[in-house]
Image (cartoon, rainbow, N blue to C red):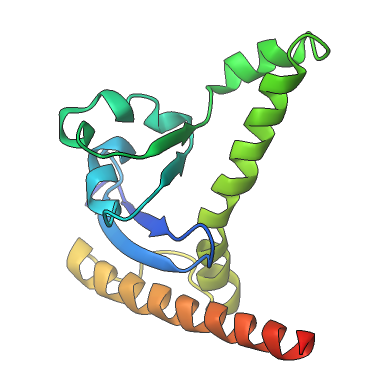
Length: 154
């Protein structure tokens, strides 16, 4: 707890709703919690470059998904040095980034709509409870947005 905390979330790619939440101390690597974020019905997993080794991990070996993991920033930078030659690879990275951005939307809702700026309590358990409530409310907020959008289109 001394080093802060992280909230790891699993988000549905189609709806943008949060389906799983794990809070850990900030000094724990994101990759250690990936197995806890999967619900078992995924067709693909989209993640940032910190998850590069995910397909090779023992606990994730039996997971049958397509891994859409971003390349490291240094590799993307070298691809952009020759844009004509690497146009397809660059477009694939942009596509991965657009899918990956869906994970950040619930964080925007809890920070901007609900004013969550920093951890309020000492200890992971209390903060985990607060974040669980905030992400549940973010799901309700998102469902309300989807209903209103559907009503406007009718």
